[in-house]
Image (cartoon, rainbow, N blue to C red; front, side):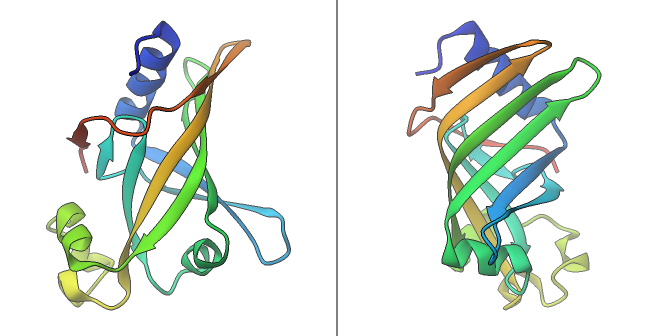
Length: 151
């Protein structure tokens, strides 16, 4: 369980970040980054759920290579959190319903059953927290209580 001061600070950063940089591996083997809205639901710092387009480049990349990274930042405090793990692309309606919010029609005009609407599930394995000029590596627990985030 997350008990250390560093892990508590890292979780606080996750909770207050409106956006996250999501990293995937491209066809050419190079890293690709994309800014996304922070996760709609998460299980502590272990599992994160994001909504996205089935037709996106990132979805194709994760279907081929599930290795992924997330990066949360607070530029004003010069804090950052990198999480490394795997990303699954989910098409199950239960996951689509789980993270759907009114207003998502702007991205998915056909609603919750839009074929261009899917869910990413990121499962973290390890992390690195940056606090000013110091950094700390840690392992991520596999399961924690699920939390709904704003958005």
